[in-house]
Amino acid sequence: MQSVPRVRIAPSPTGYFHVGTGRTALFNWLFARRHGGTFVLRIEDTDTARNRPEHVEGIMSSLRWLGLGWDEGPFLQSERGELYRRAIDVLVGKGAVYACDCTPADIQERARLRGGPPGYDGFCRDRGLEATSGRMLRFRTPRDGSVSFTDLVRGNPTFPLAAIEDFGVRKSNGEPLFILANVVDDADMAISHVIRGDDHTSNTPKYALLWEALGYGQLPVFAHLPLINNAQGKKLSKRRDKVAVEDFRDDGYLAEAMVNYLALLGWSPGDDREILPLEEMVAEFDLGDVKSSPAIFDERKLASVNSQYLRKMTPEELVERSGLWLRSRWEPLAPLVQERARTLAEVFSMVEFLYRSEPVIDQAEWDKALRKNAKFASVLEAAAETLAGAEWDVEGVHAALSAAGDKAGVANLRDSQAPVRLAVTGRAVGPPLMESLVQLGRDKTLARIQAGLARAKEAALSG
Ligand code: GLU
Image (tube, rainbow, N blue to C red; front, side, top):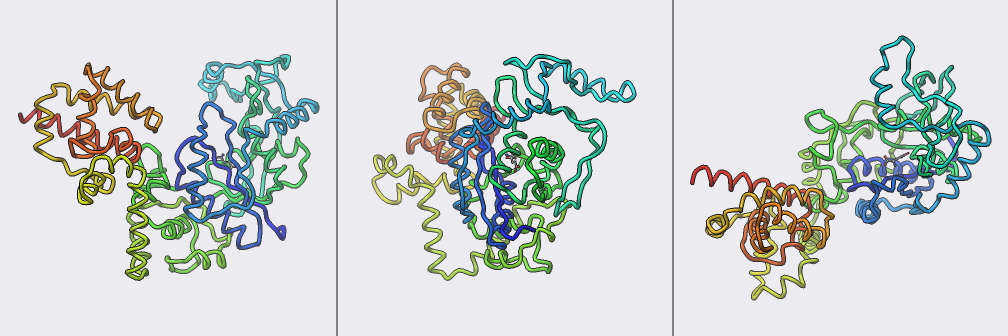
């Protein structure tokens, strides 16, 4: 091992900060701290169709909340295009890549035929096309032999080259593909250990081929961290499971408990200790102790770790910490609540919906609204749809609610807001709806709208 390692966390700003990214960041951070190394933050935002700048802020605030400060960066790949262009020139100069104009449909069709004619791999081949703009560039993968690399978690996997397609390195619009930018940056940033999720293991043979073609010398050491499954043993998924670190923060988990629990997703100190403060983890962390079998993310287990941290506090600390949390949740709504409340007790009832796992529905108001508005359920149905794809800010939510009103055939915004307000906050009045939904967050808003819809339908059946 090099005496001073350099590691990185390289998230793509395509969504919320996933607990898996939190675990990867933590293992990199622990490894760097343990060995006096450097922890780099790199934002992999080359996929312009999928990246959103606001997620970069979310990545940084989640890392800060977890206490995983970085020593260098953030470096944005979107600002490093020149470096990738130069690397592509090197590959072109060496004849390591060729132009290709296969469409996704061509590739799909060939994949369908794969396994039909014996020996047919369905991969793209060099057809001698000129490298004009509008054509992608593919790496010419040798057909014979194999590629292997050092992996501290998975042993040293070997991949036969015959199974690796001629992968793309540059898109037809000239943008570098993920694998190219990933390799060029690791070389440029002198990364010694690539510690990342197991979902990237299959990219690593391509990584190794590119690394060699670009003449970068000795390959970094890899550590592919185990997959994370949910409590039912299925791969954690954004759709099904709660996976955003921000959501755990908003639900009142402590950062130190979260970090402690994340560390146990694949690693253990070698005995049955489960509660380990960060300093102890730094002293004991070893990539060689990381298991390769999938880890289980179980919120009940996290809650149990969290409760142990809560119990260790003094009552004064508990009051202080929960006060900070309560405050952070409703503070953004304060100027709006101020305009409407007459007492502190009313302030509380206006923001209470932010803290409950389910809203307390004012039944009299609910029945009244349902009676007055024949489109009540249709509005909720339409809002569930439009809000699911909305930009999660005041303008985006406003546009989605107007669209829902149009869809449901409701003339004014008031009538389309009332059902949503009741379903989400439980009340007929409160701070402005858009700001309230933005603060509550998309997932909770959608879950409450669905529950409200079920309730409205039930009422229709029984009434
Ligand atoms: N940008 C990749 C991701 O978010 C990480 C790549 C890497 O760590 O090498 O999955």
